Length: 302
Figure 1 (cartoon, helix red, strand yellow):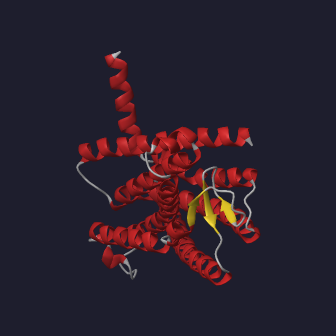
Figure 2 (cartoon, rainbow, N blue to C red):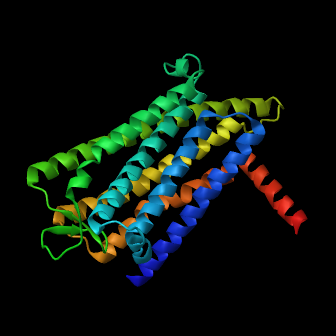
Figure 3 (cartoon, rainbow, N blue to C red):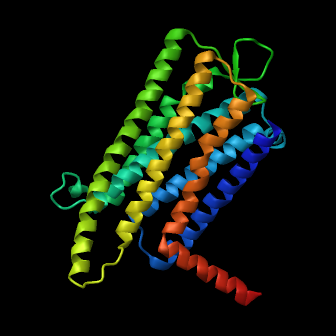
């Protein structure tokens, strides 16, 4: 159990540094190119959400950080657990939005969503408002049922300090149904957009093979590179999310979280938040070029 907790803290530390580094690199890159792509806004929002999510879970688990806040434990538990749930909801919502944006970007003019392509940035701001409002509202029940840890027997311990009080069967069924419906809706949209993206990539591949046969050297376009990255992120997210749902549903149904199971769930739930910025950095040529520039400047200053 101690080993799992140490692995979790290492994982969270890597994820926090990776997301912060991604945001820093992106801010420098945007200042240089003076052009903001729709995917840039969405990936930065995703990195910010993951950064807050990892910091929140560290606050819940770390004794020193939890005691650092000069608030009653009850208020800290409500605030941190609510923020954690909202960030997890925003993670799936933003990943879904990223996949839809990529579909619109690569779609031909005959596609029904192509009319949004030229004003995509303004629509993204409205989409952010919608997904924030949705997740703030749908997770508001957490505030009522989260309490500081006590010796009561009808509590579901979610950390050393915080617990969730029991709900009656009707409310629990309603919460689970709404939560699974919302998640299923976003995962379904991701899968549909991913299938459409695969079709577009296959079509592009056939054109590339034709150009290659005509002795025209095909090059991988930035849009194609970003599309592949989004596909990797979506696929990885769906796998990790399904594992998280299985563990969470099993524990909630039994109304019991074993400490080892809880640590495993945290590890699984935060893998995507840790890996996604590394994938985004490694696949963005602009970020890699800027990183090389920063390394060269640091070497010269030495």
